[in-house]
Image 1 (cartoon, helix red, strand yellow):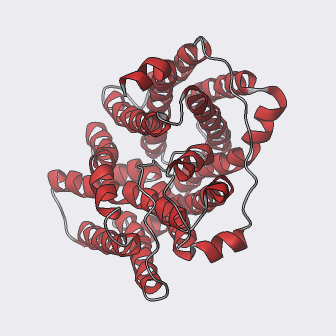
Image 2: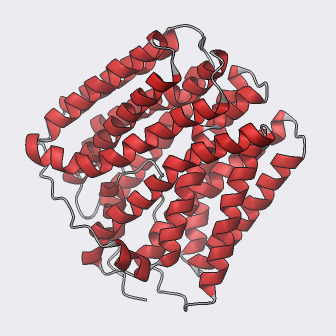
Length: 410
């Protein structure tokens, strides 16, 4: 790990600063939007717009990189992010914010693909798994730190919008000044969705549902907090707890998954999460227990995402991995677009409890489908688990899917 850090610390530091900036603006918009009296539906459109841009960017970024190179794409998209972040408080209109969120999502998608290409280029076959693990850890740490930064500012002013812009600008310095050559970029040939579905129906359905869960969970967390009358510090603590839970439970769940049928573990985790969401939706809980709910929620969704990647991995040969990763990410991103919209609609109909009802409904659907799939096919060979964040691009997912030499068809 020390060798990885010695070669990749500029990139990892830059990614952490990027995630701090992205995490601040993601939560801040929900709080500031509520202060500006945007409706729940309007805020849900704002939040889902990020994922629409991210999905579009994941399809466009590879061709942009091939055409003009990593450095130009990285610099151009970074400048665009910094500019948009400053414009939010100057244009207090939910429709304008929605357009800006599309731009932000598109740009961050391209940034992630570029950064992960760089990481792959600096790592060797022996260190690539460690490098990717370090990359995912700094992503989560950046989001957690962003919630702490949010708690120290005033959402009604300009400062909390300027700080993310500055952090994003600073993030490019260690990356662009590092003495590592720009990597080559080979875009994987995409696997047809029909073949991906035949290979792993649960992987496809699960990625679609977890996209909706993750986007609804994090995208609408600050909106739920504002509806619940939480203070800014409490909203920040809730958002941080979502990622702390994911960071804490990623490895234990992965360890268990390598020793049992992953589909059964997906089923158990989904049903457990459904129960937790039902309690949170119908039982008035003190804030301390709300934080426990957040820890469990984050601790379920992040490992479930990685489990679905590993499950699909179990059924593919090494040569098929890169193409499959693109399809899985597309399904996850497509589900993410509708997560905040559906969650916001339900919150508007039944109140703040709709936040947990929506998440519980998707967890229940995933658990039921996983139980059905267990009855339809024998357990495949387990190919090895590696923790991934739903923020990862198709390049990171493809790297994980290619990593394990033990894989075979199941």
